Length: 268
Ligand SMILES: [Zn+2]
Image (tube, rainbow, N blue to C red; front, side, top):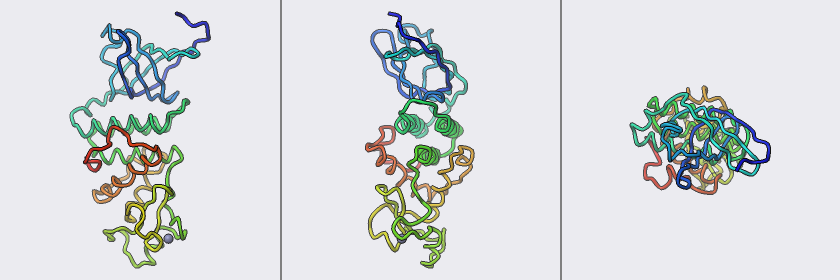
């Protein structure tokens, strides 16, 4: 039945996040769009006629989608076209896992409607680097840190939460050579969203070296270009793999499915 209310026609670049069958002929989809954030839609006749949307309704494509909105009704997908393919992702299971994770993460961290240009740009950069073969865990940590900063959850990594000493100075006073510590100069407390220095930490929190603290700070830049250029050493990547996903889980209050429970939360 056509709606009596005003209809709005919208278009945006988008990634498909979720897709499930609905009834005999339709599919229910969730897109993460640049213009409107997360948008649930129905694709009419997508199951009955393969020609209706071709093979376009897949993850790992940057899509150009159009849809119509009417009050109190689910948006209806009008068209979808591929702008850029990241299909190389499917060649490697670890890349698939992380690509799914980035999609799930953007939807989980930015569920409110409205324009999401920065988050979308970071998601696009993450998908691109996964398809180009960057280490999956590194792409994951870069996107996580940038998303957290954009969402206002970026931890304060500049100084100790308890004594306030700047991170770099507290190490020099302790006579520790940055980069050669090999151990925990700091501890990260998810509940505090910050670090404690060795003097203040005791046994609480997750250990982090100065290098890891500095790298995480660099990844909090809001520019995907800057984040993309940050090089993460294997040792620091191991440390960040133990801390950033846990902090995300803490903020969301639940684990995310794409990576959760797998023994190699770590490197890809
Ligand atoms: Zn301290």
